[in-house]
Length: 287
Image (spheres, rainbow, N blue to C red):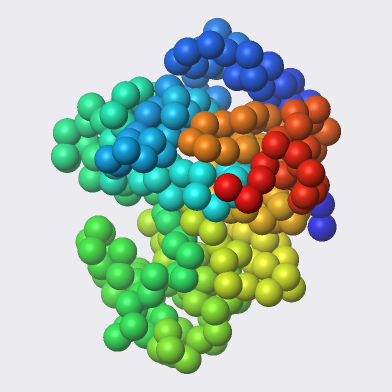
């Protein structure tokens, strides 16, 4: 399987946005180059420091609406901190994070809680409740955030479990599942509230290459069926090649380059070339 290339009109917008982002100085906004509603999320000159450790260093990136975006980067480059900024678990020391044009750091608590309902999140290990069955894990967000009857909840839960190939595992406990099955159950739970944005935190972590490929195929199929903005945070180059429509490369707390899949795979940037090729020679070392 190879990654999908956006249609010509979308590709043209991505090329314009990438050309703008690759040559910006200071805070970046995309409004002059690309319509504002093209971006589901924008990070504008985001800085974050913990003690003496500067994690995010003027990070600028736009996440296109309705696409599968891969945020690639080596370990320790700020991927997890970026995730927490996108959903308002952390706020920047400087800069801004906008979700559908709304500033996350400037939201009230009520607005922030409502904004988070737009997100579905698949954590590295699935983050299932060990004392609940697969069914109850997937039903949990619906019971917490909706007034649906148990009949309505059952219809939604079984539909989502069917989407991820777990319809026959609804009464199993997390301890009875393989790592790949736990991730699929977490994926089903991330989808039950029909989020506008689904975020995957290192979904390939702990999986062998075959199961990683199968999970990528599942992500692509579910996205094609349900739509939405998907953000996959990973260091796995093969995953990016399989499913990415848009790629942003993160290194030492800032985005080195971002753009449409084909443009990034043909990038002349030395770091991007080295990272996507998995080559030992280049600006990325062992530090």
